[in-house]
Length: 210
Ligand SMILES: Cc1cc2nc3c(=O)[nH]c(=O)nc-3n(C[C@H](O)[C@H](O)[C@H](O)COP(=O)(O)O)c2cc1C
Image (cartoon, rainbow, N blue to C red; front, side, top):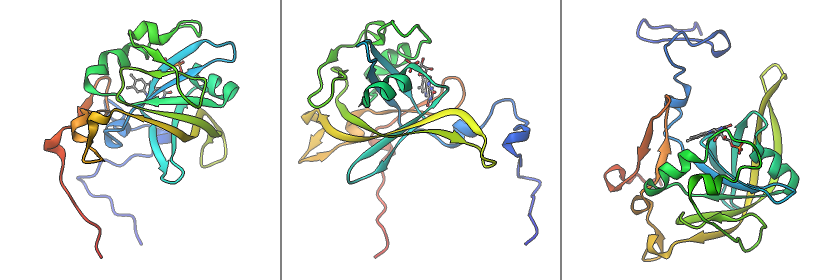
C-alpha cells in the first residue's frame, strides 16, 4: 500500500523534530493519571514527586508503573529499597502536588516542602500521603532502562511495582463501588500547565459487545 499523506495531516518523524511550537505528544496522550510517588532512600530520607508518565498495567495482581525521564531521586530510592507508595492526586491537593515536583537536593523532604503529612504504611517502610484519599503500597517488580527501536539506551527508566496494599477513603465508596467522579481526580495533559479535572459531567457508559 502507498503511504497516504493528506494536506490536512501534519506528519512528522519525532526523531527529526515535530515542526510545531510545542511537542504535541503530551497533549495527545492525555490527560494522564498522575503517579504521586513517595519513596525512601536507603538512609531513610523521604521523597515525594509527581510522575504523569504513569499508568496501571495489570489487574490481578495489580501492577502500576511510571517512567522517570532521567535517573531521578525517586528511581534511585526505589532501586535501593524495592518499595514505593502511590498517592491519588485530587483537586484539593494540586498545589501540594505541584510544589513536590521542585528540583531540590535529595536531602530535602518534599512532604515538608509540599505541606502534606507522611503517614506510616502497613506493609512497606515508605509513608503515604495522609491527605490523599487513596494510596497504594507497592513493591518493585521491574526496573528497566528504556531503549530506542535501534536498541540504543534512552536515559529514562520504567519502574513497575505490584500493589500489595490499598488504602481507600470509605467516603468514596457508593454502595461499595469506587466513585471516580466523586473523587475529584486531576489528570495531566500537555503544555507547561494543562490539567483536567474529572467530575460527573465527564461520565458516560459504554458496554462491550456480547
Ligand atoms: C504533573 C507532573 C508530572 C510529571 N511527570 C513526570 C514524569 O512522568 N516523569 C518524570 O521524569 N518527571 C515528571 N515530572 C517532573 C518530576 O516530578 C520532577 O523532576 C521531580 O523533581 C522529580 O523528583 P525526584 O528527583 O525527587 O524523584 C512531573 C512533574 C509534574 C508537575
